[in-house]
Image (tube, rainbow over all chains, first blue to last red):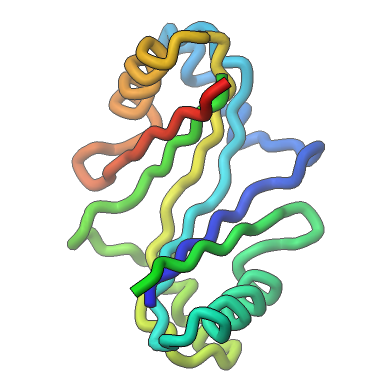
Length: 81
Length: 81
């Protein structure tokens, strides 16, 4: 079973990486970029076939390793089949 | 206008970062993780209101800065409104 996890910074948390991208885009001549925020996209291939158990496992993985829940949010998406 | 860009490694390109995450999950006791691949998730806030022009700009941004098209694919998603 394939799943994806999106890890993004919470609102209000400074994002220097996004700021750097924004400045680089501006330096390349792209005007009208009002903001950039960068997160992580993680594709996970699981042996588990039960979507409920898979989501439970993924939630634990996010809390323990993939996301820093003090400053980051995460979103789990499980592909059917 | 808000847009998101997903940058992922092409199939066949080695992903040491994903491999490290996979090994860390295994070390934490999460069995049954068959593979992990990590990509970038970028949220961009654009002044441009026309979705067609916005997509054109974003495509140029991806090719020039956000993605290394030799080894990475990108996917642009534009939020309406």
